[in-house]
Image (cartoon, rainbow, N blue to C red; front, side):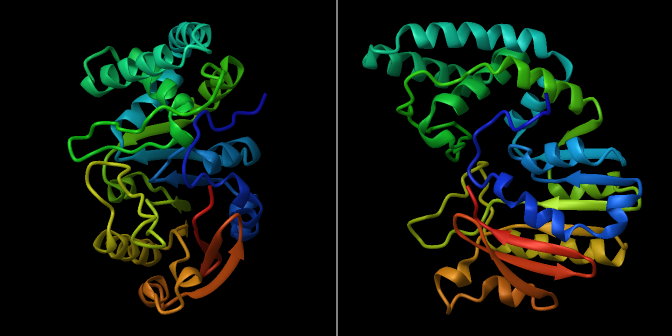
Length: 292
């Protein structure tokens, strides 16, 4: 079984794999290279790369969300214990399927426990996956105090423990270094030739559609520009990179934010479920999208 994302994730990039494949420089298809994903999220591109490019000599994933990276680390290091905890959660949750108020209370208790961040790391990872599989739309959203605050979803009997996939994910993660922190720190892991794939918190298409509370510190316009500058640094070091974000210009023709800050690059747009932009730099395309 090939590994696939074990989380639901807003902005997941599975549907963009064909376009990303077309964007890959030819040299990365035929030679050994380092793959770095500084905003790993659900890892859709990571797993595709690892499943299809055996010439990846080194892979590094990073995220500022320590709850997320802990979950990756636990899957890599202790999948059987994690599966045991998740299986128990699934049995308990499915047993109260028709008791709406009891189910809501069970969910709320698990969310409260998660937010204490006082359990052992395996249980914390299991709580992370449980909440992801049972919350509204699989969103991950925190408040300024870093408290996960997404309400319960309406799923009747969601898959909480996908044992076979978790074992497959654990196997491929043996080839991956997992780090936590600011994306710029990943540069120290970049051995040439390196390919970076960036999928940062996307820029909202409107004031009412904003969803960048992925971490307690927002990823606003200043951060988008800082990321652009980091990509320029990668160019000077002769690394390649792919970047995705939302097509604000496709929503509002007067909003040229990305057109302006990436004015050194050719901009093409491709379609997913929502509008996406495509930046090209050297032999690497920079996808700008908001695909779910």
